[in-house]
Length: 225
Figure 1 (cartoon, rainbow, N blue to C red):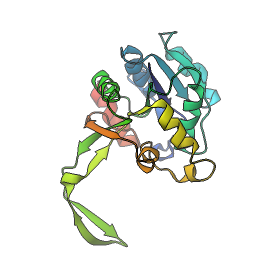
Figure 2 (cartoon, rainbow, N blue to C red):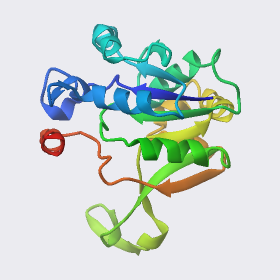
Figure 3 (cartoon, rainbow, N blue to C red):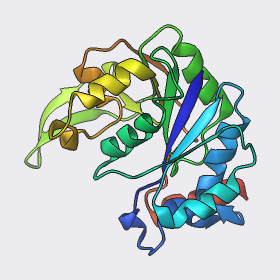
Figure 4 (cartoon, rainbow, N blue to C red):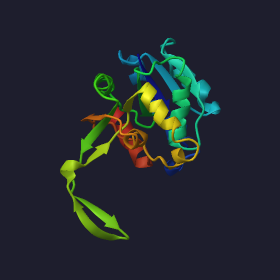
């Protein structure tokens, strides 16, 4: 079994809007609806948990068409990683240790069915899976406003969501970071890296960008027409 944890608890302050970006209109429906549709349509996803604030849950619930896939709501945490752990805790009675869990941001509405399936397939052979985009520009190390090193971009990559994990090991490495160290986690994959989990990389998707600024939202609106 494979479940998805859809993160929709962010406030999106950089958008300059009173409404979080994942609930803004794009093509006549909320941004988050595109993610829900992609995960509902995926044949590899069995259940979907949404991490969201109480005031948006009625809206989110109305966007689901597959009653069997909706597994419930989890409360947002004080940071992104605690929100992920909140979603994982809701799946404790649903998933077994060897089952898969795919974590995704509601602000990445162009996630494809192919990428979701690719992650689920790679999880059969690894503890965790990260979609990666190659870096096109020359990459430098910069400290205190000065270039200190030229980095080898062939050994570097830009990670994307969604990210996949084997449920049991990932839950345990997150629980081990409680109560304080989890507050310093800046990315979903970081606990897996810290624990030495076997992490596979698969090709990312350049269309699968995150909506962070008004320009990103306008770009998405143009793509969907």
